[in-house]
Length: 349
Ligand code: MRU
Image (tube, rainbow, N blue to C red):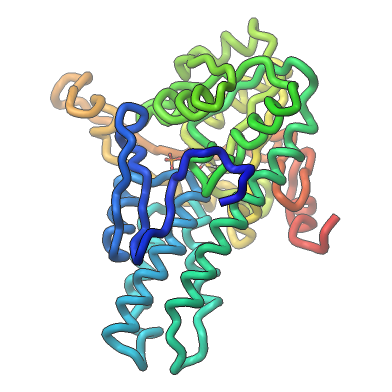
């Protein structure tokens, strides 16, 4: 991991297995889950041991290493065909974050010629994707922080930090860089019901790094934007459509509407691996629905009365028109649309 990354290790490869920091129990327990098979990686992604679009992409890359390794041991000549079903199950483990499919396609693109042991090459490539993710985050951090004036007060949603990536973070990368440049006054972290990524993960990450963080209920954001001298809302993304519409944690859309209503600027920071040029607009992005039990109580404590139903989409789509700046490792675009998004995939600026 780059020396610029924050010290928390979200995931790492250890002697034939993928180690995942268990984000279900942070910040009260700091423990790793060891995944020695692709099935264990799939279960860990579904259960949100690891979460955040770039982090699940990198976990999937290592999952592909495990899947190919097992297929090669059983079918040395036909492992390419044998591994297909495992890779499709891995791809389907969470539907909204496109980084998952991107990482698997990137790994498949590295499959060596028949007759060659694929394991060393694929492990090296997964490591390269991990390092590239940290480098992209550091680059985005610098680009994004350049938009902030001195003493800026920021709202962020969910967790788009080191825990959601291979290190440093996307939205929290911008926040980390702004803090280092002495531009940041305070970060307001939304609680992020129902899974509490903001309260449990973002507040912990920022506090550990000594960055001033104040927790707010999700429903306090409008009030804070009206009265709190907020400069920017900064979030990550799970999938960005070709026209610039952004799928991110449920509640991002409300924040963007509120930001526009109160003259607060709205920034999305995400690597190009989060941009899905095959999805024309936000209406075509699959939105994950999770078990209503996540909403009806917390951990083992039921809060809603028995018999009550729950509607639990865990992502929403923010229209491109509400986004002031999209920051990627390749460049930042103001008021993103399909032309400026396509340009990001052209030669370097
Ligand atoms: O359900 P989660 O915790 O995986 O959702 C994560 C988010 O919505 C993040 O904001 C997004 O993945 C960007 S992470 C850099």
